[in-house]
Image (cartoon, rainbow, N blue to C red; front, side, top):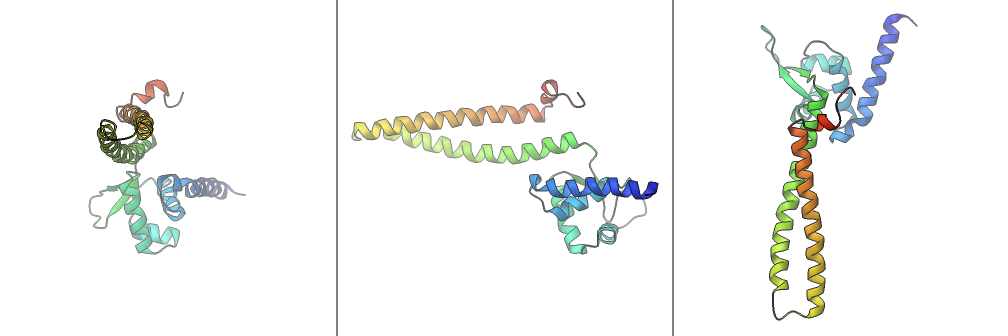
Length: 177
């Protein structure tokens, strides 16, 4: 095997591994291959470049690159004199993970917090209703304790996301340690 073949084999292994794991970002293996291919290019690529290299349709490339951009894994680039849209991989994988983690968990935290707050309010009102039975009151109090527990969990998770966004996490788990 010559040097170029060894290089291509090493790259292909990484591209396929990215394709297999990209589902963690909610993306398809083809988007992973596109991302992996872009990763090894030192210059921005057009959709036509990607289509030619990967043998996928331009529509598929466009959909994937949009999904990759939404997750802040790739970004648009600009080169003087080039009229077509150019894309490149964002160089900071740590920040890309933080962005993805934050986007996904902030949404979840928000949804749960609203639901918990509303349910706690309703259950507190029910608990204080003089007409409910002692048996139902015990059940309501147990449910309130459970909801307070998960509320505390989501408050902790919110602080964890803050630690990622503020890069405080790197004090606990430094890169390249």
